[in-house]
Image 1 (cartoon, rainbow, N blue to C red):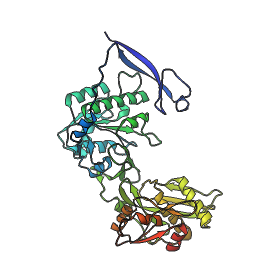
Image 2 (image 1 turned 90 degrees about the vertical axis):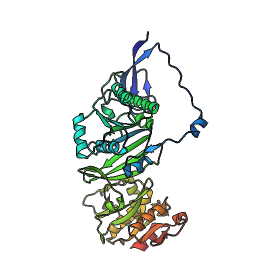
Image 3 (image 1 turned 90 degrees about the horizontal axis):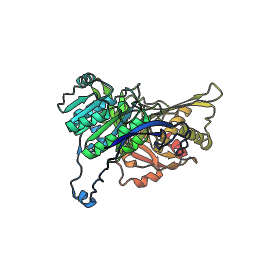
Image 4 (image 1 turned 60 degrees about the horizontal axis):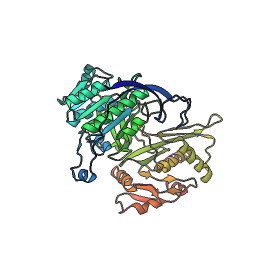
Length: 449
C-alpha cells in the first residue's frame, strides 16, 4: 500500500531555491522576505523504474525533427522557421496587448490538431474571438479547464499535436496547497507541462502575464525550463506590435516580428522600415536615421532630438526607446570633446514608433540628432548614421554593417556615415550608396554641418 504525505517547504521567489525551513534571508541570493511556504503531496512506498537510455549515434542517424509552419511569416521568423515538435514555448506580454489573439491565430494557421486551454475565459468567449478573427479551422478543440491533472487527461485522450495554455497563472494543481498564480503553483504546473511535452512530443505554447517591471510573473525558473521565450511588446499609442525572442534553443535570439493590430486581429508588416519612416518630416533639425538590427533583420528607425534652454536649475533628460544612462554619456562626450554646452539645456530624445533598441551602433545617430537640434542645422535627409561612440569621441566599428547598408539602399538612402573600421567587414562594394568612413565624431560633424 502506498501512503501519501504532505511535505512543507519554502521557495524563494527571486532565485527559485527551496528549503525545508523558513529563513528571513534567502541563503542563496541573500534577498530578504522572498521565501513563501508551499505544500507538495507525494506518494511513498512505490518504486520507480529507471528511464531507458538512448544511444547518441542512433539518434543522429534518425531523420531530423520537422518543424511545422504557422502560415505567419513573422512568427516563423521569430521561432527560427516554425514550431518544433515537442518544444515548450512561453509567450509573455502586458494585459490587452494581444497575446490571446496571437495564440488563436497561430493555432488556426498551423493546420494541426490543437487543444486550446483558456482558464480565464469561457468557451463561448473564445468562440466570439474566433468569429471576429474569421477563424474557421476544424482541427481546434476548446476547453476552459484550469486543473493541470484534468488538462493532462484531456491531452492524453485527444492526442493533439499542439496545446495552448492561456494562461499559466490561472492553472493549479491539487498536489500543491496554495492559490493559482502563486510561485509554487506556477512551478509545479510548468514542470508537469514540460514532462508531457517531452514524453508525448506535443508542442505546448504557454501564455504568461508580466509584472510591472516587464518580466514574466512567477519564478524565473519557468523561463529556464522552456525552450523558447517570446515577448509581445507594444504601446497603447500605436497600433503596431513587436514579437521578440529573448531565448530560443532552436533559433536566433533577439529576432523580431512586426504586426499591426486591426479589427481582424494581428496583421503582418512585411516592411517595417517603411512603417517607422512613413510620417517622417524632412528639413527639420534634430532628426537622424539609424539602421537598427533586430536579430537578423535590419530596420530603419528615425531618431528625434530636441534641445532647449532649461527653465529650472536642473536640466531635464527624457528619452523614449534608448538607454538614459547611455544618453548621459553621449552628452558628456559632446560637452567635453566637442565643446558644446549641455549642462544648462533640456534634452529630449525619442525613437519614433515606440521601438526600443540597446544597440551601441545607434550612438552616432543619437549624438548627431542632439547636435543638429542644438545647432539648429538640418542633417541631409538621404544620410544614414551608424557607429558606436567612445568616451574619447572616437567612432568604433559595428557588426553586420552590410545588412544595415543594404536595407538603407533599398529604401532610397544614398549616403552612409560609417566607422572606418567597419569598411574592412564589407566583402564587396555597395553600388548606389556613397560611404563616408570616419574615425571620430568631429569628422562626422564636419561632414554634416
